[in-house]
Image 1: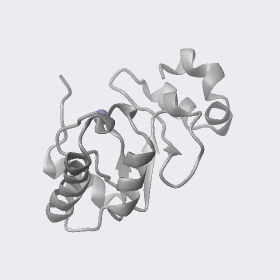
Image 2 (image 1 turned 45 degrees about the vertical axis):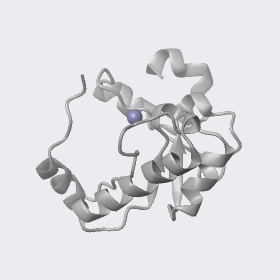
Image 3 (image 1 turned 180 degrees about the vertical axis):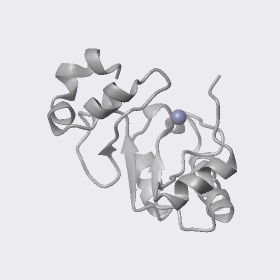
Image 4 (image 1 turned 180 degrees about the horizontal axis):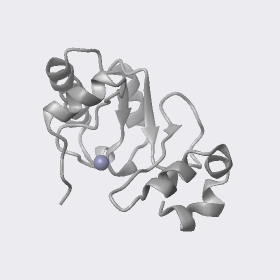
Length: 134
Ligand SMILES: [Zn+2]
């Protein structure tokens, strides 16, 4: 079970310039939902987050990295300016709604975190993913 941030921690991170994006309300695999359910997950999570953070939420991350062209289109139509995909989806054509993210997990050590951010590792992710823990 993941340990979640408190809203106080979120506010502190906001104060330091960290951006928070939406990740849906219930973390479903969006391609398996109906169009209406998908829209609900994509839009309500953004509205709830904007109300809590009192600022615009402009980015989205697809739960479990599951997406398809329709889901990408719904995210764009919902007004997000961009979205990120997991490294495993790196073969999807790159556009503002398929930006590659750097996966940081509980087991990611500070040294691996720094390594993951280097241009060499980002460019050669497929070759080094065994080392980086995905
Ligand atoms: Zn997730």
